[in-house]
Image 1 (cartoon, rainbow, N blue to C red):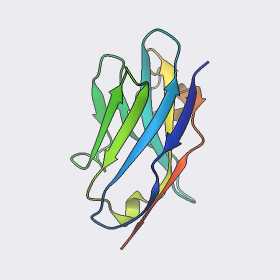
Image 2: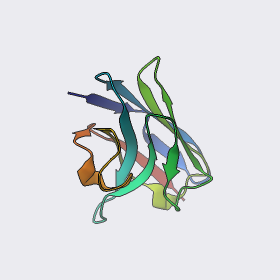
Image 3: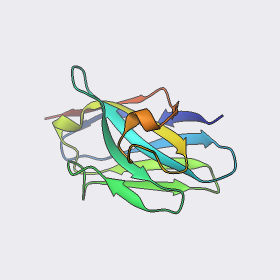
Length: 124
């Protein structure tokens, strides 16, 4: 069983930065982790993912602005978000799955473990 707890959300003006963290209690073995977001009335979307061997994948909407990283020694997953835009406003969730997600890195149904979410609000 993997438990995930997000932190670091908040409110910021457009152009600002936030750093999200996800504390992970993880079993041994290779896992893939991702950040997803969901705004009211909008389907959940994948933002960034990182495989156990460190390869990161980003949604086109955040490339060049967001950076996903993991600190295996501290069992934490982070998402550094720069140049934030109002359209980045959403609830952000970290998620985990063993191995590689069967449906691809941004297929939420392939991730059985989820955190409770942290709100990010970007004002114009």
